[in-house]
Length: 165
Image (cartoon, rainbow, N blue to C red):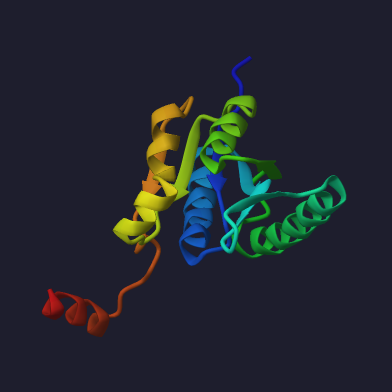
């Protein structure tokens, strides 16, 4: 028996990831696929004052996982039709890209959808390129949505953007 396709979307509660969630839900509905909705908590935070890593203790990590699961449930209820089968995963790890790839592999996803954000060149240098790492290591195809994907343009916005260019 053929396994049902799964579409995974990684979210971080930004406007871009909300658009990715909407796109993924439409894709899953059209393809009659299940959805895997992932949020990654990084276990290590860096204190900018001391450049020292801070590791969450298990009770604190569990608290944040529950908080993120609740926030995701609210977001999913608004954006994903009830007809689409879905699972919500909040994963903790050192690298967001590695966790996205690992969850996609373990869940046997057939597609990953991820949103690209506007970042300065300095941010790319300091934080690295998450999208590149996911595309390079993913066990399945990856759709990368442009930051403006999902935004509806009015006629006046369209004119303003092209006059400025």
